[in-house]
Length: 390
Image (cartoon, rainbow, N blue to C red):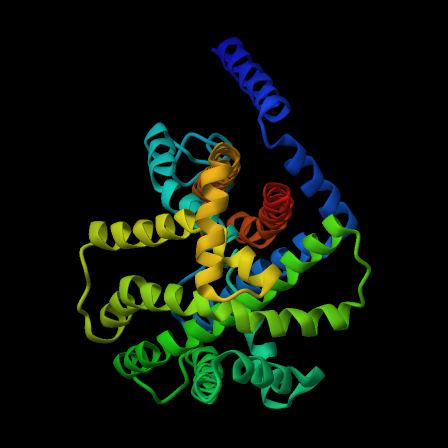
């Protein structure tokens, strides 16, 4: 059996190498890797956001543990059994029966699909790092508030004031969300759930806007590498914030769809116990991801060229008609890599246990390879986009 497994692994590696060497977008993938090596911020920023989120959730679980709510078990009981400590039991150090492998393969397709869509929208969660953006916004550090206000007013006129007010409301919601995570004393569980439901949507909107700004910032790094442009990091950060005003046009449509299809059902389930069937929620999440894939060039077009929404719309369909083959191949290769990552994360976490010491270490380390792959694919996407435009 081991010989068969070794042969299957060798064939898989050979097939992967052949696929990477012969696909029609290999030049863009190679340039994307070179871009990541030149600007490591493309993957380090994504990895840092993921690590910060994992550390925050660990702190929340530790606070529950100290209050007597059992969350973390650290080690399985069979660790002390010399016969079963490594495997062979559900309490062993490693336990992954065939049924768990099949379940992991089945459960990983939706996270992988949303990760692919994130390359063209928002690649990673931004909480709790979004709290630093809240502080920068309120205290106008590096003129962030001034630049954002100028960009919104320039793009939307008087409506920009209303949008700026919505940004500040979302910032306050992020602060409230951070407090409610730790279940303040004197507030019942039901009240905490209702308050969390009220702040979930505005907080998610601010986190999405912050993530969109980070993604535009990274896209501009890759674009500067493609064009051979030198820049100052602070100047590029301010330019990304101004281009965020153009990207907001498409983001408003995405936010409305995401709020109705994903956030609102979660709010109803958290605060009032009105839960949609799991299959329906899965369908809505998958549908939103598919829509983002269909309109994959919109964000890049708005971020790089600052166009109006109708012009970006026409440019999107023109590029899709002319380069359907290359775009399809990029999506296929991104799907292969991100699905493999999702399966690996699920299987390892299931094998060692989610709340064990090894599971915690794996959760904290995981953002590093995930950020590296996401940063490489994002840079490759910008290289492919510019190649198709040329």
